[in-house]
Length: 370
Image 1 (cartoon, rainbow, N blue to C red):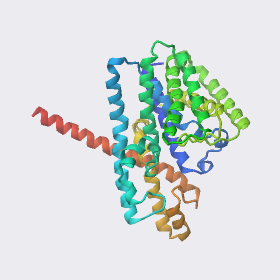
Image 2 (image 1 turned 180 degrees about the horizontal axis):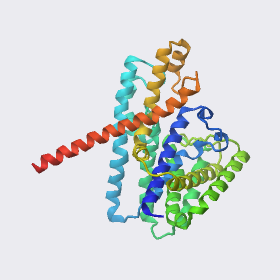
Image 3 (image 1 turned 60 degrees about the horizontal axis):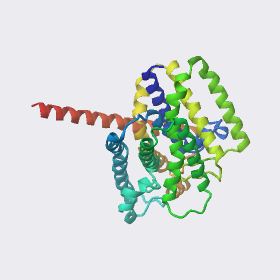
Image 4 (image 1 turned 135 degrees about the vertical axis):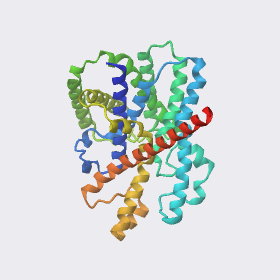
């Protein structure tokens, strides 16, 4: 396949992943048409899809480029994460002033150095409205560790490192059942699991994808879907949550479910590149995944507040002020409308931000050329 198709398949995979993240945060997934959710639970693989994409896009570098690699990841991940975290500290402060709720931190706990600069890389749930960005902090730390290990083990075959990372992932999962004290264990456990799926994405690009043929994709999709179905039927419907490393003392099944989920949706993305022409909506969604992940819960909060406010339902108002995950359950269209808004509005913000950025660049170019 051509390189452009490779990139487009990854864009589609990221789009699928972010839609699954939003659906997971919506709750009541069967209401959104997820009849297969009990046998293909999205929490077992949706975050792992982003790690797979990062590994797929990872390129070799040497020790001379280590500083550049670290700065590139800091500029694209860590600095925007801290910037948006400060923005959400302000948003939560304003909400506390006008519409206090029980699930946001008290005002005196918002503007602390811990919550502003450290917590985004630990739990990532310091302000709730941007809790989905916990993944960004984890991804940043994981890529730094992976990049360093890549340099140290550069002469070791990829398949050997895949086994090493697999063992490390199993060790990380096993450690979740131990009485370990200290919140930084959570960070280490996440990274231990994440490293395997980053390297799995790299191995897929180098060794699996070049051997794939288009006419075999449908058969592979059917086989993977069938294996996934029976695996979950045998093991039960586990709602794995990587954010807290809640894996019910499971070691094998989380890794198997993640591998199957990554393979299924990557092959599906490759199939889509053949069936659906590239279009502007796809392009916008692909470059808005950061915006959607960062802002979709704010959209959800505003949507729920609007529905509750105008419904004048006192029971709903009470639930909304005490339960962050409350969502109006009056009719099915609330869920579809909410899902659409949580994806569409962050995309509009991305368009606006790109427009402002382009105008600033144009103004700077005119100023320097004058």
